[in-house]
Length: 134
Image (cartoon, rainbow, N blue to C red; front, side):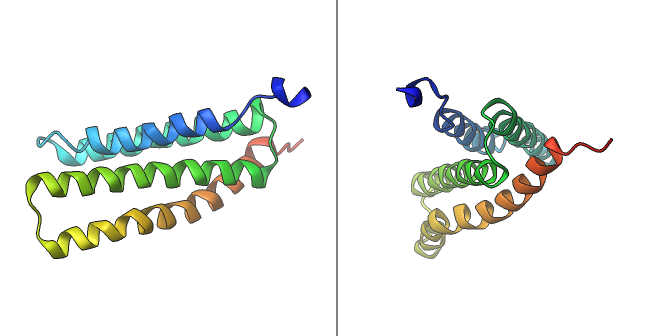
């Protein structure tokens, strides 16, 4: 019965991962000032990343490794969403077979390549967030 009132980390992780994928797709659309839009996407993603760490650690009270795991899973899911959108885009624009094969690999590689550093950074950030130096 006590588990029913406990807040779940899953809805927040899904929302944050959808934010990562949405920002990655939408901020890549404007052709003008591409570098500025890319930096803005990084900024929005960094804010979402930091807010997710704060929520998971301070609001839910999860341990540092658990926070890092939740963050890494959200990042990996966001990367998968971005890879899926790149694959869909490649089908619409008529990419070469070689390019589509590489994009198919991205469905597995992007989540793996983003989750590991996300875990390490979230672990350190979670620890630093609750560290008290008096």
